[in-house]
Length: 72
Image (cartoon, rainbow, N blue to C red):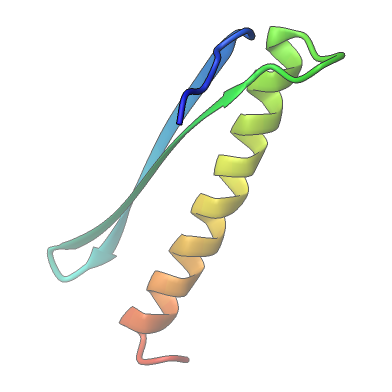
């Protein structure tokens, strides 16, 4: 399968580390690459991908905290 790259690629990577106390940390990192879509600017595409990652990190941190707290 060949993918023809005819558009600009944007890549966003974010990471978040949270101190859990008692000498433990939790780190979540996510990176996403996507192409600029029709009608988008590079800035629009970057903001779209950034928002996606930001939401995913928040979701995954909540899930990990719940697991760490025994599902509470």
